[in-house]
Length: 227
Image (cartoon, rainbow, N blue to C red; front, side, top):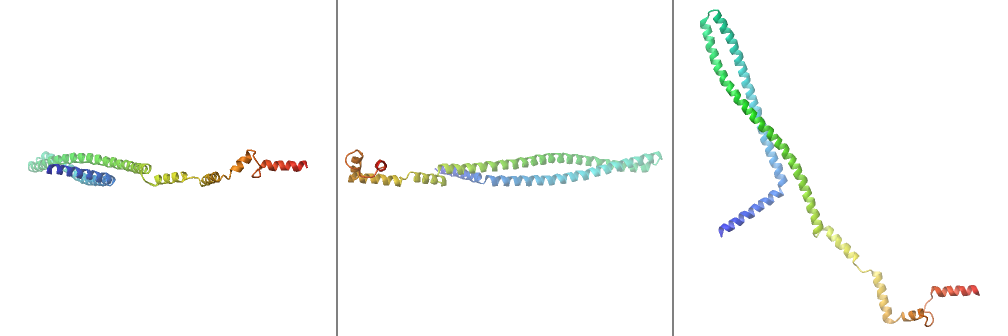
């Protein structure tokens, strides 16, 4: 029982988290882009520091090489002058500097590798930031389209302004014509009181006319003319 409740609670929590994530997706995207940019910026600073250390180490290597070459020339000159003691002292100094040079070359090689790896990482991170920003632009466009579609769907299917307008139009158009209704009521009253019976019999030729017609006026005009 408790296991089932725990499973249901976990599922509900997961769905709630998904709804929150969906709702704030654009804000989360921007936040993740900022975090990625911050990481790339930190990596760039580290890369700059490594390059600075590599350059300093390279200068030390170049300086050692120059000193070694200079001492070698001096040692040769001392040997040429049969100054064994000074030549031996120079040889000892050269050996010490060459050992230092070997260590510095190893350090320089390691720094070169670190610089290369970090440079590749920075370039990849920078490209990723560009891709993320482009993706964010597309996500915003899709979200705007979804919002517009959602509002349109609500307008077309729900109780909204458009639906209410359609209902009012149908209500106005569906109303009875008051003029036609008045005519029908008059006709009903005439039928009930037999008021139109004399008119109908007069029109049929039974008895005198009950009202002046265009024919009677025309007959009168003809009679006046003949007189």
